[in-house]
Length: 75
Image (tube, rainbow, N blue to C red; front, side):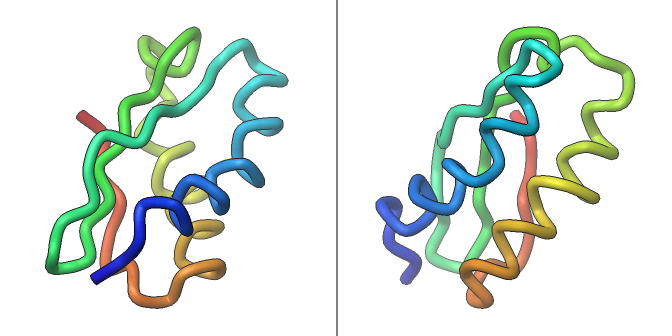
């Protein structure tokens, strides 16, 4: 099982990138099967490019930091 604290620590590497565009991210859940569920907030929450940011930016960084992560989903 993936520890939420590890995910939060990895998200700290992502937040400056999101904050540069007026957004942020909140950790909602880490499932037993390695799925991380996040909520994009600020301008990221309503941006039409948010799915691409999530997959190509956030998910990529989180998987590099925590290889046990299977996928990242936005709620």
